Structure formats: C-alpha cells, structure tokens
Image (cartoon, rainbow, N blue to C red; front, side):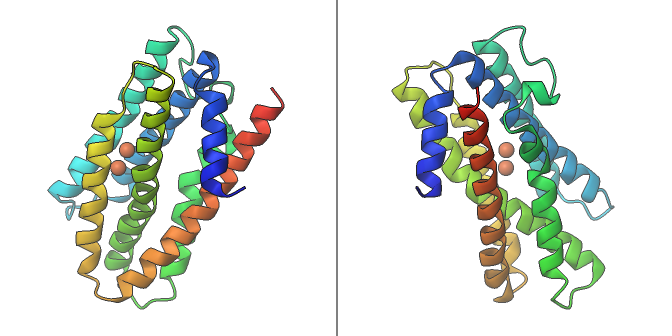
Length: 207
Ligand SMILES: [Fe+2]
Ligand SMILES: [Fe+2]
C-alpha cells in the first residue's frame, strides 16, 4: 500500500466517526498551532518581514479555525492538546521538530552564514509542510464532501497555496542549489508523513 492509499484509508475510518473526526481536527489544529509558534520563536529578529508575519498569523488562524471545527462537530470535547485528545500523539508532537532538525542537519553540508542558514531552514521546513498541506487539505475536503459533512477547510487551502508560492519565490534567491534542498526537504517530510500515518493506522486498529 502506498502512502496516499494509507492516508485515504485512515481518513475513511476517521471521518465517518464523529469522535475520531473531532480528535483528528484537534490534531491538525495542534500541528498548525505548533507551526505558528515555531515561526515566531525562530524568526524574531529585527529582520522579520511582512511575509513571515503574515505566515505566522495565518498558521495561528488555522490552529484556531480547526479547533473551532473540532468543537463544531463535537462540542465540549478535546479542550486541549494533551495526548488523550490527539491522534498519534507522539508522532503529531514530534513531526515538526524532526523535520526542523533533519533540514538543519542537511543544510550544515552547505557553506551558509548563520543568518542565511536560519532563513533557508525556515523556508525549507515551510516548503516541506506546505507541499504536504497542498495535497492533504484538498484530499480531506473531498472526503468531507463525500461524507456530506458540512464543514469546510477551503479557506485554509487557499492560504496554504499562497505560502507554498511564497516559499518557492524566496528560495529562488539562493540559486540552483535550492532545487537540491527542496528535493531533500520533500524526502525528509515524506518519511515523517509515512511514519505519522503508520502510527495512526496502528492506533486506529487497536481502538
Ligand atoms: Fe496552515
Ligand atoms: Fe501554511
């Protein structure tokens, strides 16, 4: 089974089950929230520009919006992000950190100034996530429609497309080498997404 099939199978188990679905939305909310927190904590120098501020604000909004959706389909559940309110809690918590560590490690092989390395790492971590977001959210939206569940993530989809475009544009400034970085970032992210889905499949089976 390839990764898209596994993700599809997971979603087909999760979405029709309100309790699991609310937990899934809470998990996505958590990952978005961590994304905005990470941007703020790594990009707080006086060099921060409008694109980064917008990006942090939009990821924070996604976190809030997905939490609201979680409460819309199941009020009074999942008040926080403690493990019992998340799917694949350890993997969900570690996903972004592991991505960040691996991308920073990969960039060490290149001769970059400390500021450039920090900025390139931010762009590539985001690139990896946005690549995923740009397939995950439209796919999830399709499953919502198939199950006639009246919530929508379309507003997130359009913002994530914008983020990916901005990352691609900013990475161009690093020249051709950025294409090699992008492939590596995508490979790293892909493995993390596989791990996350396998853990989720494992947890769903043992319910
Ligand atoms: Fe997001
Ligand atoms: Fe994003």
